[in-house]
Length: 159
Image (cartoon, rainbow, N blue to C red; front, side, top):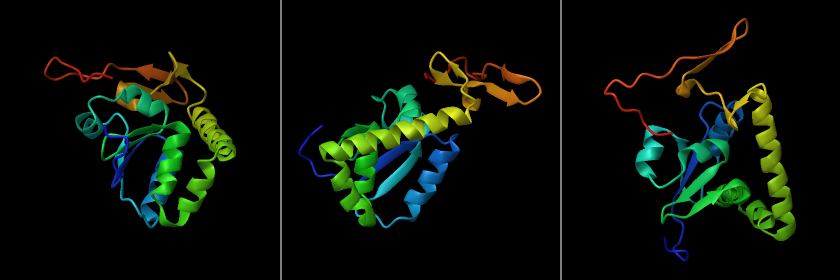
C-alpha cells in the first residue's frame, strides 16, 4: 500500500443484516459524492474475493472502509473517511479528524455499536452475534436454534 496515494474510490463494508447499517447504506447512496463510494456487504463472497487479506469476521463487528490503493480504515477513522467522501459532509469530516473531534467520532461509533447490540437482544456467542448466514434462526416462541450450513462440495467458506 502506498500511504501517499490519492484516494479515488472507497469501498464501505457494512453489515447487511443490521437495520441501522442498511439505513446508513441507503443514506450514503443518496448523498452527492466527491469520492465514489461502493457499498459491499461485509463478509460476503464479493468482499472476500475483493479483499482476501482482510479479517472478514472483524468487518462484521466494526465498520471497515477500503481505499482503492489498499488503505484500510476501521472504526471512527472509517466513518470520518466516509464523510470526507461526501460533498456536503467533508467539512464535518475535517472537524472530526481533529483531536477533540475524534473523541466525538469515537462516541458516535460506540453509540452505534451499542444500539446494534440491543437489536440482537444482547445475545452473543464468543463475542459475535448470532447470524442467519451462519446457520442461526430465531423464533419468539423457541428462541435461537442452530442448523449447520451445508457445504455442497464438502468444503465450507472460512469465516
